[in-house]
Image (cartoon, rainbow, N blue to C red):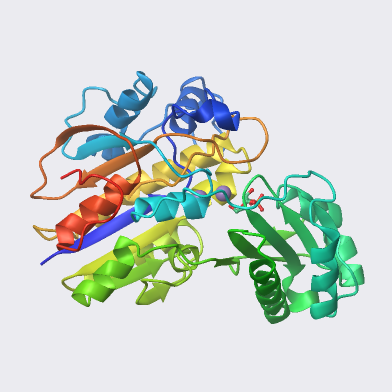
Length: 407
Ligand SMILES: O=P(O)(O)O[C@H]1O[C@H](CO)[C@@H](O)[C@H]1O
Ligand SMILES: [Mn+2]
Ligand SMILES: [Mn+2]
């Protein structure tokens, strides 16, 4: 029986990549800096002491980070016996965004440049705004700038509720984001506005990776909360991913847990399960693993690392989330049949000690575990696509155009 379980720890980078300079990220290190802050007693809110990740360390996380940076992360046990295969990978995609990272991992790097809204203020072209206002019959819009998604709610949430004007914002990513109140504006109306925006951006050749619906609740500044009803409208990957090949070539199953299906624009996904929060994502993953048959991939995106802690520059929150993940990891390992493959990786970094609120260009960990997989150091991988090639090889699929199989 062949099954692969892929756990995407969204934004869990392990050290600044060789090309980080180009992104202004030279020196960024999501894991390393979290570990340092914990060691120095500067991440004690809701948790305490050195970073404690015994199960990830046994899978080779510390060794992978050491390979990437030359330093073993503070607090992790450098002498622990490692039972997994470990490696660290560079990204060849031109961007450090979520779709690029995910697609590259599935064997399809993004070698073209996305379109970006580079201006910090008045970010969106007037023609685009006018077309959207007219098509969706809006009373106007707010925002039209770069912002953190939580900061902009404090700034404009009340005005949005009063006027019914949606909040448009972007970031260093190739995104058009729309924040609207779930109750006063309405969730379905927000989704349909996003569909309209997606259509206009695609037809207009703007080359924008994602339109993201950012629904929120609450009644006043300081108390707004984004909900789990976020929805990403991505464009389709430019060629077949290993997910799609498993479905097309083997009649296999690909189960998306969390936002995976959205990131691949539903292509190569046979079933999707939504869940909000790390524990719920874990529970859903376990339920899917229990019922997974032969020729199945269960692929989970743990978005909270990125959206709740990385972008929020919340070191203690990120550390606590990692520790929660680590505590629950044995539940996944216990479900593995002899030929199964468990892969833990990330799509980019988001160092919570870094300036700004954007992603950071980093190496990602590649931790592969299975009862029949030889533990050890599989070294530096030149592209995340080595994961896609490894999975393609494992299932006996036609080879991917990029990447070298690790096992
Ligand atoms: O600040 P929030 O809304 O979480 O935004 C983050 O999430 C978006 C998608 O990854 C990017 O724009 C990023 O900056
Ligand atoms: Mn991401
Ligand atoms: Mn992000």
